[in-house]
Amino acid sequence: MQFLLAFVVAAPLLGAAAALLPAPPGLRGSSPDQAVLRHGVTVTGAVLAAAIVLTLGFDHDRPSRMQATTDVSWIAALDVRLHLGIDGISLPLLVLTALLTFLCAVYSYYHPPAGPSPKAFVALVLVLESGTLATFAVLDLILFFLAFEMVLIPMYFLIARWGGAGRQAAAWKFILYTLLGSVVMLLGLLLIGLRAGTFDMVALATDNGRSLSTSVQVVAVLAIGIGLAVKAPMWPFHSWLPDAHTAAPTVGSVLLAGVLLKMGTYGFVRVLLPVAPDGMHIIAPYLAAFAVVGIIYGSLACLALARPGAKGDLKRLIAYSSVGHMGFVLLGIATLTPTGVNGALFANIAHGLITGLLFFLVGALKDRTGTTDLDSLAQDTGAALYGKAPRLGGLFAFGAVASLGLPGLAGFWGEMLAMFGAFDPADGLNRPAYLTFMALAGFGTLLTAAYLLIVVRRVCMGAPAPAPAATAPDTPAPDTSAAGPGPAAARTPLTLPDVRGYEYAAWSPLVVLTVIAGLWPALLLGLTDPAVQKLLSGGKS
Image 1 (cartoon, rainbow, N blue to C red):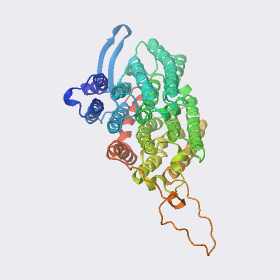
Image 2: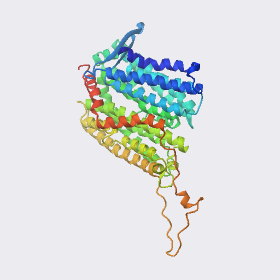
Image 3: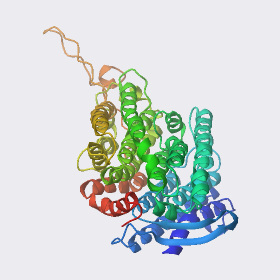
Image 4: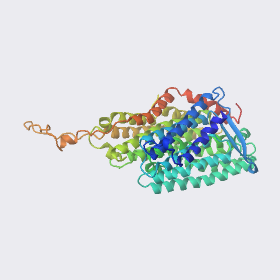
């Protein structure tokens, strides 16, 4: 088990180095580009297989205990250790990361992004995977920071080199926001480690803030929380996200929404809740308020983009929807209750599955139509995707209704549990304030349903066809039998390529897991709940 976890974290990094080497003659296939893309599929597939074996070998009867641990001294002078381990909180995120990266590699093998050589693209995706997996597996504050920062440069280059219009400005905005937040976060991590005398996250969680004064905890929560909030992204630190998603290639958007945003919320749960409980108790109402503002703001921004004539970009709309969905995650964390935190962790996984699927679908739409502009996608045929590519339209509608939280699909449980947690927050928190937050979050779900149904109607059904002009009873009907450009021909829906085989391969697992998580939430909650209970009780099982 220890070897498997170390392999999962290190294999993508080794694979990234190998991707830059010349392919052996027997493995080149039809071209060196094909060889390196196949290499990406092989490495990410091996990592996913190892993650699945790790899951099967995980002791599901004791998910609150750290398992598959490795603890080796690395920098003795600073007492920094190569400490790895997983529990019921980190294991689902580890598997989600391995799965999404593998699906992105499969998609890229058949549909490489336009841009420079695939060698650099594959290497950057693998480095990104390694950094994300390490973030969810390390148990040392310094290693956590290094892994947290490791993903920034690969994502910057994925946006700047393989992105679309405005990619340079979006990449710079992404890197500047996240780096500035990370500088402040590093100061908070150092403050905790130096005051507590250790950077070991397990020891700090067991100590449960007893070696840190309340003032130190508040300062640490503010400093670390800013860095985590930028990555989450929490309003008002979110403004880098819509530009980054709009400019990023399809694979970049899937990984950014599916796993990178989870690093911020995971940090709140893994670091701040157990290490600085008193500081979190003081800051929690403000965190909840910002989260609720993000829910309403993200939904209103999506409504503005979805209205006809707004020239709204579909990728930008889904990016703003992520601000709202991650607001529910932050609200659940801010309740400081097992119900709310479990809801936050569930919503993390659900958002990764559903939004990853939506960005895949929007990328496919752009490949087929050359645009993600909602007005252009709706057109005026009265048919749109349902008439042009019905399977693609059906999948898009599925992703949208899953995102709005339809009962029976994964998006429902996380948001519901977060609001349940707000209904009865932890002792000492202002219950009337949290009831207000719950009511506003509930209103946000209505706004979410409104804009997603508008988007489905416009993209899948198109704009209503204009009614034919009234004619006198004696006027003969126009002859539409002849082919040629005319009103009748214009009303005939154009066909688009429907879902291809490799797209089924990349998207089907996300659809299946969204349904399974929605119908059987205990599969995930059974892992997270014991670990959350232990985390909130100060390390006591």
